[in-house]
Length: 280
Image 1: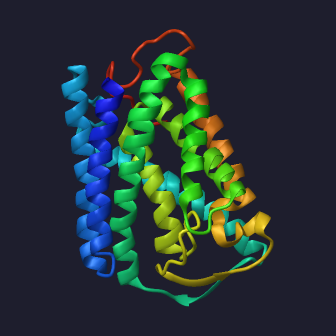
Image 2 (image 1 turned 30 degrees about the horizontal axis):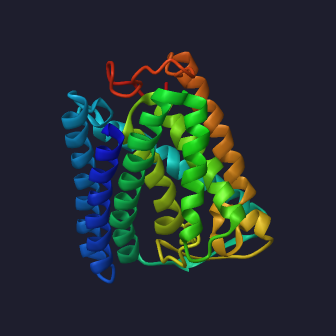
């Protein structure tokens, strides 16, 4: 029932935020405000429902150090996607034709913040954390990563390969990041940095959801294996490779910090002890 109440509470916050963002999506400045508000709402609801159902503070969304953790996460996400674009650019598959739209990028800040906060609270804060208590870190990482990838099959230009790529580079990687840090601010930052870099900076398609106009006016062409085709660069083997590499790094950190939950141990992993520090 703890899982059910938490899932329903954050799902309700997600629904309210999603409807609100869609209602103002044609106004970039309103999208910024509403998106950031939706992100704050879903985090607040998560903290509230954890306190009510588990009789404890949700330390994985504690405000102390939140800005720094989210900032580091954003840098990781932007850096990861930038590495993908650099590989595409040097191979002649990504070309910058000029400057794009600053206002469009502003709107994408709000949109991507709302999406990142919501998905991290749902998939890492509730699903991964609670499932991990019962079946351990590795099985929970695999299961929730696959579910996260399959959820992207609902997108407009989704492909099976795109869903597999998302499962590896995002589902597995973000769960590993949460296991290493026990902090949702960092995973929200990574998620936001990746999505905003893709749409708001490099103006590429995000998860098969259509074109975006960010800071750069750019075009992409070439084999789908490298560019991701209509699904966008998240379907690129470069993205999968970098995501798999970061997954291993975060799992190594989780091992080093003693944050791996063994199958059958049934210990409460997230928020049970002191707030975790950032990777050093």
